[in-house]
Image (cartoon, rainbow, N blue to C red; front, top):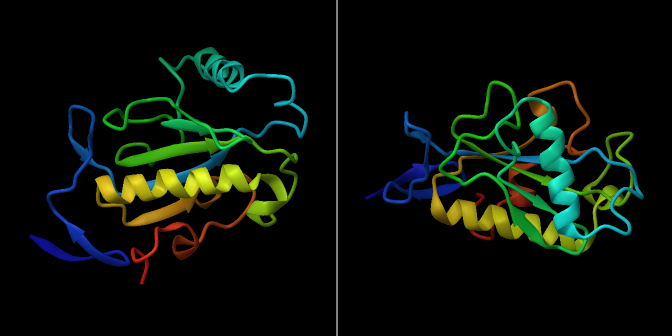
Length: 169
């Protein structure tokens, strides 16, 4: 069974549910690690991932808050399972997936994605979003800055610019 949804047809058979309450995942949120332009240099992706996880654990969280982190070379390291509620955007964690990108330029103002991230990072993010759109009923793709007074991820996220081909109207 299919019905019209955001940007196209959505299968009701494709669902990712989170937590014991079974929140339907329908929101994808882009983030930045909010690190300096040189923070990533000389570190492996795993070292960077573990450092971000350490920051989140220091906040008292049980694990990294993101569902994944994307690095300048395009590698994606998964964080929380998609079936787990994340800790990445206050008031919108249940029913959302949150992925963070490591910038190669410090995010100090709103700009374009290319101002802060490598082509490999942006392509990998699009790949993760396509995977999510194929797995569940993503109805909205947003930046963290839509939910909080933050620059994160450093640009305005437009659904159509991030949705896979054929998904957005």
